[in-house]
Length: 416
Image (cartoon, rainbow, N blue to C red; front, top):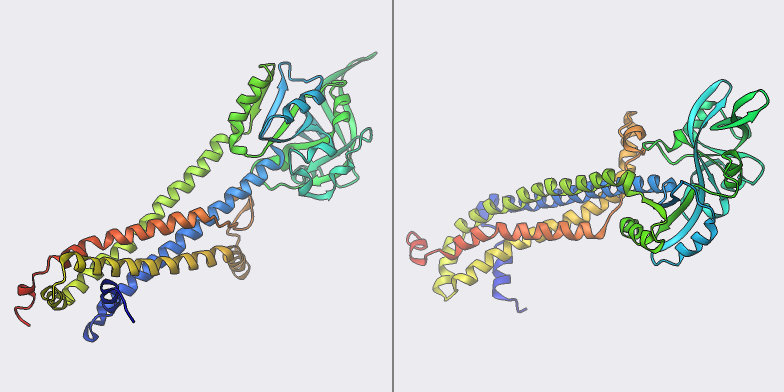
């Protein structure tokens, strides 16, 4: 069967002479080194992608993408504002809210909380709160029944369970014949949520019905603001500016980057730096090809000289060794990608198995936001890693191939 000369000779040279198997072993080690480094890089980036996904899920379970409030921190006609905002391209949903500080007490235990009044039928448009209930449901927040939903850590601290009553005290005051008294109201616990630790949501957030919140904070028919969800959360700043213009600068507009932007940028930078650092492992493995190919060139001096006497050009000789090195790099990269994908798909189960077998907790939710090792494979990560590994392998072949092309037939065959 016909084969291009360069390809045929390169494939033939992948095996050294029978008495010099060490050269083949060096090539095999280089291939395995590339495969292992590529697999490790894919796995590490997949784990970081997993943490990134989990952090986003926890942040945006409760934190709105964009928040619109009035200049006096209240909005009067929120329905018309909501209809106007929804017409802007890139916005997927809105929901009103009432927000205020308060103290929650039960059995002489007191805890400061951030109280949010929400509409259960509207809240799903801007947050994933309804997906994180461990007891009860969002639908139990019915107008006039003064129900309250607590974070799991807050409920545990208060010793409150489903159906228990807690007292909520707010900074507003009530004037009575006996003097000025702080406003407080008894609420019934109708739900407990858990969005994970790390950001304090489980410790400090409590939700009540919007209309109950209006009565509690004496807002009448007003709300604190409007929560806005957008299709692409990374366009929050540009859409905030657009909203500011469309609404004629009559409202205060903030977005998630004001509070969590620096943190999220730090996570992104960490992933980038990890990619560059671990890419050095791929570079080291790829440049191991240099020693293997140099030894191969020395081993094939006489063969190269004979090819030259038959009319082979220096460029053809150079292409033979470039192709051979690239072939080793390609096989190593392919095996590394396959191994990295396989390991990334099973790394969560592997770490969980290690934790069970040795009775250790490698992943602490108080530090890493989750108590397991998450993993998410991204196609572009694999493409970038594969491309980088192949380019480094190709660069590693240049010197040995150039050295082979400089072989002088007379010198090489002098002692043959």
